[in-house]
Image 1 (cartoon, rainbow, N blue to C red):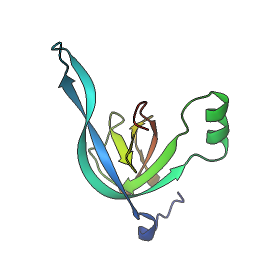
Image 2 (cartoon, rainbow, N blue to C red):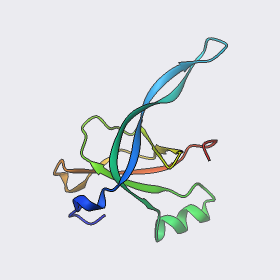
Image 3 (cartoon, rainbow, N blue to C red):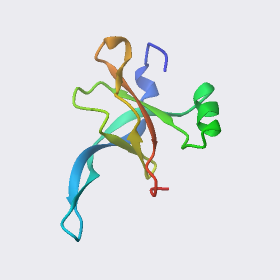
Image 4 (cartoon, helix red, strand yellow):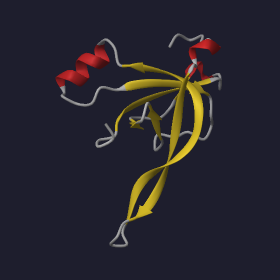
Length: 113
C-alpha cells in the first residue's frame, strides 16, 4: 500500500490468529492457532516480482494484509480471510514507523483450502 493508507481502503474483515498450544490424543503438545480479534484490513495478492519468485520456487502465493497498528502482533501470528488461514512469513512492518498501520506478509497454511 502507499505510504498514505486511506481509511476507506481498510474495508475487508480479517481475523487475527494468535499462537497457542494444543494437546493431541497422545498427550503431546503441538503449535496451533486460536481465533483472535476480527479487524478491518486490506488484502492484496502478490504482484510483480513476488508472484514470479513464488511461481518459480513452486511455493504458495503470498498475500499482503494491511491493518491498523497493533503492538501485540508478532511474526508467530496468522490471519484468516474468506475461510482460509494464513501464517505470517516475517515480522509485521510498521508502515513509515508511525504506529498507524501494519503490513503483514502471509502464505496459506497447508490443509486449509
